[in-house]
Amino acid sequence: MDQNLFNDICLQQLTLSGVHEGETVVVLTRGGERGEYADAFLWAIQRLGATGY
Image (tube, rainbow, N blue to C red; front, side):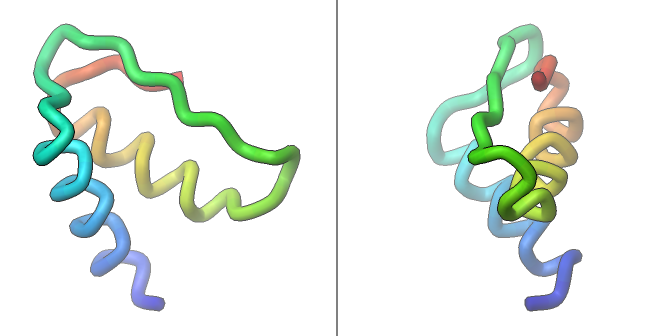
């Protein structure tokens, strides 16, 4: 999947979930699996003005 498209999907998901500026969001992964998912969600969290871990 195109990484830019996936980033946009993650941004839409977090927007629909009500994530907003000032919040803290934790991204859980299973070790090193699907690191690109974590990266995309962390990017989206930052775009929304939230803090991601």
